[in-house]
Amino acid sequence: MTAELQTWIGVIATLAIFSFLIKENPFYRFFEYTVIGMSAAHAVVMTWDNYTKPFWVNGVMKGEYYLLIPGAIAVLYYFRYAPPKYQWLYRYPLALIMGYNIGYSLAYDPRPFMTQIRGTFESLKDLNSFIYLVIFIGVVVYFIFTFGNKSAAVGKTRTFARYAMMMYFGVSFGNTVQGRFSLLLGRLLFLLQDWLGLVKLG
Amino acid sequence: MRRNVPVILTTVTAVIVFFSIVLFKTADVWPGRFDRMQQFMAAVMMFMGMANMTRVHGNVVLKKDRNWIFSAWLLLVMYVYAIFGMSVGNTNDTYRWFYNAFIPPVNATMYSMVAFYLTSASYKAFRARTVDAALMMACAVWVMISNVPIGDKLWGSESWLGGMAGVRDWIVSIPNSAVSRGISVGSTLGAFATQLRILLGLERRHLGQG
Image (cartoon, rainbow over all chains, first blue to last red; front, side):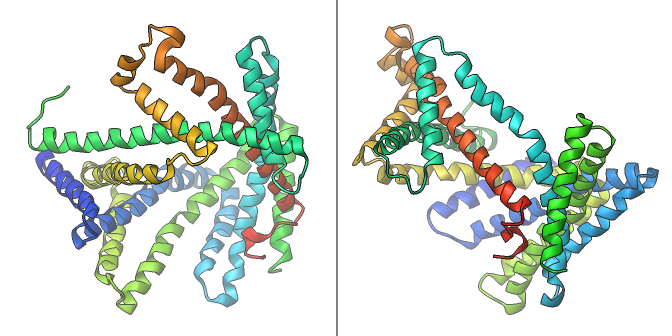
């Protein structure tokens, strides 16, 4: 299978997806469903190659038999789709995974969190660092006093924090728009340069 | 057995994992083993996504709902590609050929198409009726213009305050960074509170109990 054929498939797929801008149509839907199916399969293949197979071959087969216990419990998760009478069994692996993640998170998360807070107060040396601190405290106040506080000071702080957050969302929006337009130019370049050869860039 | 045991299991596992990490300090024998156990569990559960797709699209095919032929095609593609990939490995040339032919072009086009919808959405969102909307619009427009050559033509980076790019860099590194840190601290506090609620058995929604 040649690179030309791959380019042609890419071109047809690109045009099919762009055709949605006119109207939803079977051409678009065919590629949409194909890629959803392939993406789901690819996720399984990657997990199989990177986790399941290595764990089995280099773990269980080499004497780490304790892995069979969580493995057997994990199988119970598929009871999510069993008849209602047996569905409750899926809660056991879920409970174990939640427990693991909570324990892990409570042990490891406070450190970077506290480091960030300390870093905010540590270097108060110029106007910018004070502006930083004021906005930071405002935003934290905004989230802590989400409900039920009628104090005027808190209300004003929350309004100020909302303005700061709007600036943040504006910057994020601007970056997102530019990122998407950059992708659009990439697709147009693929059609005009790689396929039709009308443009020569780079 | 159905309701309380999973809650107790969550608490006991969390306490054991927490103390194993705190007491052993580094990823010693037990923290490492717990890590491997959790990863192996996730690896065994990997077919859950495919099982869900099979259930949803299988129902569409069985009921001959609208567009059922596409659902049948999706299931065919998914199973053939998964079985092929699992038997030859993800580094196989043919496997990668199909991946590169379909997935990157469609994904990139899907994301790039959002540009058209963003344009119309921003027209609706950015009619500066309030201070909030005006601030958001001003920052978005400023960032977009300062990132392209015309921004430097309007207010060059050699001039006062570093021009448009200088002001943009200040917005990104001071107010934006402070808000980002504030949001991350706020969300960490929220996550911490939720974790404690689960640990104490007060929050059971993840187990399907309201």
